[in-house]
Length: 589
Image (tube, rainbow, N blue to C red; front, side, top):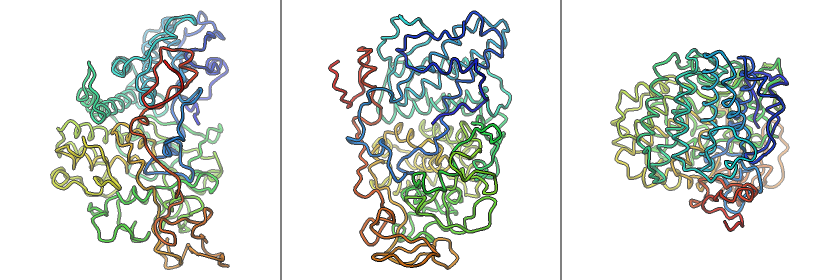
């Protein structure tokens, strides 16, 4: 689900936005004559507003090893569930045609300052467009200008990711140089361009390192250094962290200090999202955090939960007690109340397949309509300062140059916000976390495991997964770190030692009754039949971890699944397009 969020577009702009299709669509976009358009700032703004629809407003639904639904995504299930599509599959080039069309006609505007700014905006979005394509497909054709419908470029082969990344760097640097530096919550500015650069440079640097890719041109280290430089420039800019982590995501209006760029939602003009209903309603797929992720949270004193005796089978109230406060900002813990309410709520197993029910992005219960499907109107983050701190720290750690001072001006600011003790470089290096290196729960790539500074790399990954939880980052992180096998690990929920009544709120009264046989006649608590899909399935039959995915494979194919397949029809139309490794589409070229 994607939405244009920055402004309601008039019909003149939608004439362009409605021309759907792909790179091989040979119908020229001639609804409006370029000779009479692109001449004023208003023209350029209206035309470019459609570019913002590239931002995904449903990222909070993205599944991974840390976050699942009742029905696992095709990416998580893997194996034979994933096939080569006939068409679609993310191989759409319509937006690139629009971007290049603006650049082809930009000189029609006589105002030099306006012309420069909108050329920079278009190049930001072209870099963004190609970042999404490289993440999904790897090598793709570079199309740097608009062309006629019979042009040979329609049948171009794929360019290497280094060619694409080099052009992206050129585009983003030009955008950074000309975009406004003033804060601008809902429109791209210089700092949003720097954030995009930091993102894709970190992605490419780590992708090459962990996938063992060496291409002529930029090295992995080059990209990591560029990520550091872009992050540093943002960190020296006008942004600061919001004090309240929970409200950063739940309030109606984005915080102008931490949010560099946000998606705007507004009840008065019917621009809404589904964040609150997704977390609270039983009809929205029952999303929940996995036990593996919950167990990775540190204790609030900075010690490791998984160093405690009996952590594996600890029951809910004990498991979530005295943990990093961000855990209570992500999932219902004992004493949880909705914003704007006083009633203490237990996790609802009808709305959460794991029992670790979501809290992040859930709006104030007193606000009109928010509990209904697609009726939330909290702004959603695209780029925020918290992520920039994490990019900076990770890139420095991957380069092997990180210092305690680097941590103190990045991740330790995130920890201070929630009252967590500082990350100490010497301690992390001296004692890498066995949990995060275990085959059952941790990272498996030997490049990481054999790194001399593995301890600090693990801690920064822990910090990133917690701080950015449910913000659509985890899948991309697994792909760039070459950690797809994390998908194969168990996706369990809460632990129950057997049938019985359980207090999940900490008030001494039972909230959930797990039973076998006949259903009890009790309406004061949730009644969950053991072994029943509508109740709860436990890993060991009558006891164990909540495992409603039991019998459903989740298998990651290391030789295939790091990239998506190119659709069959696209390869039929353009035989110069090679297929990605491991994907069999039946074509012999």
